[in-house]
Length: 279
Image (cartoon, rainbow, N blue to C red; front, side):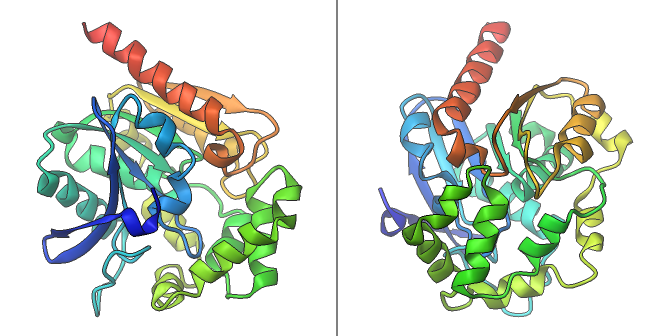
């Protein structure tokens, strides 16, 4: 499967690009907000594993990847969450579990707040969604200007394994992706300075988090320098009433890439346990 194998669907006038595979319980995978990101860039390694057990949908959120960038749109957490809610309703699914990566985790929690009737459970990886001081790492990610060297520096930032930045094919792939027509223009319009305001805008209050009573699995890389665990998942684990936390050592912000099989194993075990609890 590749980017070219993706499908398109009209979601309330937004031509939305997505990947679909597998059978079973429906899981929606929501990508992060790095430069040149797409659903496939985030999820390509776990897709073949998880699709053996679940029915997966991985859309490009409006403004990202190969989904439309509507003229005049003002991006916000509500716009992104509403797009994903509308996507679920357009594909005709009644309830889904959601895996959210970083920015995608914040979207997932806002979806749960707005439309709890659509959600079974949440899996939040290196997630935003609670107010915290913006890290230097996230500031650099959102402030990215396209160049091969800048992308190399970001990969060093994302990954615990610094040798990933020496993989010129990976750097080139992500750099070229960030340079595709429309990608950088929409990306740079989303998170202008001062960038702390965007972290705060994506955050739910402790009160709001306390009302999200679905089963939640929090997953975080211990050495994450983009969304530091002590400012986010530790606090979310205390604020969300039905949350458990798994921490991967020797792992940065790219858990699904650096710990692909282990990450997929956590997802499968969590869903299986929750299904058994309900049966």
